[in-house]
Length: 598
Image (cartoon, rainbow, N blue to C red; front, side, top):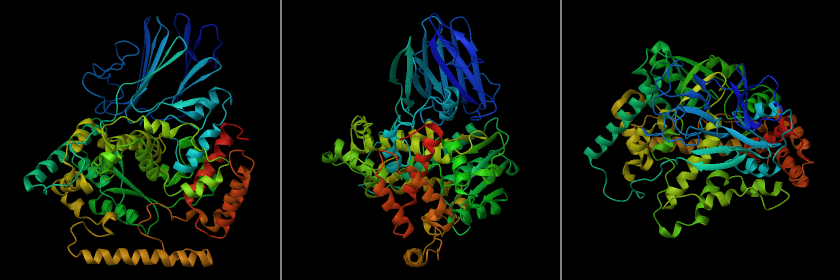
């Protein structure tokens, strides 16, 4: 369902004549919905009386669509601007709005991880709250304009950071934020932050004892089993995206303890030569599960871009690293529930910074770390494409400096979760939300608390997580994985793994030389998760890439001479990144969908 709620003075005419109106004292809330389009929400709750109007969409784990929201959930009662949760932050994926009809106050918030999110804007004296940038465009009658200052962020990061969107004056809500409008005046508060404070930072010290390892593994196993069981309660069947990694197979093991095998469907995508594809399909077959293998999306670029923009609305690449179109729909029947391994690796330590040097606990060191992770590989390629060296007009670095935390790791991980994950990973993983609702057990409160209370030596290299998997699901643990070069994690002869990896690196270098000479691919690395790293350099895409660059030459913020040089390097096969090509396609689509960039 697409939603747009418009808060304006009562004497203003409705933005959409057929909208539902809820009158306040001097202000009015107009509600515009489209039940045939937009995200699939298992639970939609509305209640209206003389005092207030309240709205909820999403799902609280363990509930059916007809169930009432849990008691104590502040959407049901309490002050309009108060979003306290006495029993702890609600699990699940949801957004909510409250309107105090006596005081003319509207307040919005959503789940801490922005699995569902609001966008908000003031346009011509009216406040708009929506779950879709595309729907906002349609409701406002194409009065939106592209935010040119957002172009460098898409080029550098491949997504919109923080509250930035591709549209002028339209903001995305950020994790834990409450946005309230009191008779036209905006008030922002943060009700909750992602809890990222670890009990220790450095893995130094004695090796963990066997008892310590066993206890940690048991705690992780029990917490994830409980989280998956809660998510699957009152759900008849699920879809599990299955790769060659460990996160998805751990959740699959938990799900198989809850649901019969014939109620579980898996899907795996990518090139048939990759580890992810081979192991995902092979594992499902060995377990007797129905698997939908999704091949590479080889449709014309314009068709993929159309699907990609409809899905992510320009907040990240319009050319995703996963297949779209009918092949993706085949794995996701309407009304699907998807058990997602969302950020499982990060929760248990894969992205931890193990740096307790107090001299590094500075704003500039934090910015350096964040930029290296988000844009390090593309900085030198992207900056020449801009007409100004001042790429940060919306003050991304200033926001970084305000990141709360006592240590560098705490600040960095807060940025990683609250900016990078919720804006890049969310849109990358949650595809076709009009057909599917995504369940994320790894971010359940109890799972998170156990993970972050582990000593660092058990978080290092996700040690405790793998011990838990070995303890709970030994068969899945021993199945070959992409992480181990296609071998089981229990393979004793590590030198064989080193030889295989060395051969793969040699073949990649050989492939590079063949490609630079002939323009053809000689070797498809099994480590490529989806698509060859030079996928968009194939001859079938040349015309589309040329047309995209040509369309962008007259945009003032981009340097036309450098864009032409970029095109020349692309034609000469001189190592142009697919990241930058995807970003350029996305920026061009902003103009097509949201207005003139010139």
